[in-house]
Figure 1 (cartoon, rainbow, N blue to C red):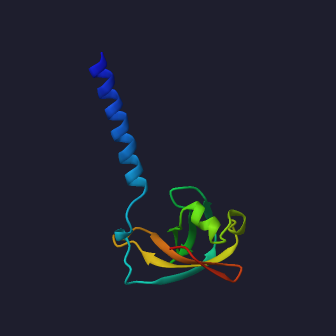
Figure 2: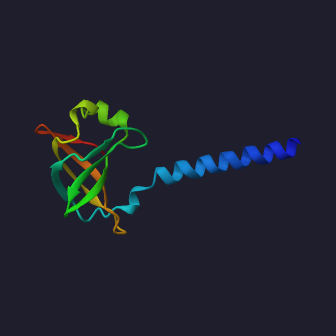
Figure 3: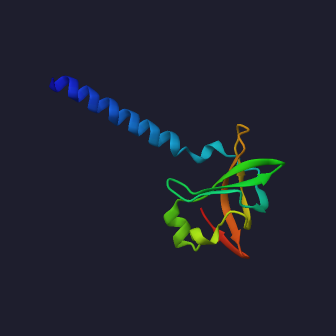
Length: 118
C-alpha cells in the first residue's frame, strides 16, 4: 500500500512540475533580432502569474503579448488599473520564432510613460 501511495504521489508531482514548465517557457522561443513596436487598444488583459499578458490587434489578427510577472509590473509602475480593455497602449518586443501570434514584451508605454519590463 505504501508503494502504491508513493507511486501516486510521484505521478502527481511529475504532472505538476511538467505543467509549470510548460506554462513558463523560455525566452529562446522569441526572435531578439526582430524588434517590433505595436500600438493598439487592449482587447484582453490577463494580469496574473507567471506572466501578465495582453491581447492586441497586430497585422489584422489578435496577438498575445507576454509581459513581465505581476510583481515586476507593479514595482516598475505598470499597475493593473492602468491597463484596461479598450485603452490604447504601445508595446515593444520580439515575435515568436515559430510563427505563433505571440511576442515577448521588453517595454510598455501607458499614458505616455515608457516602462521597461525586462
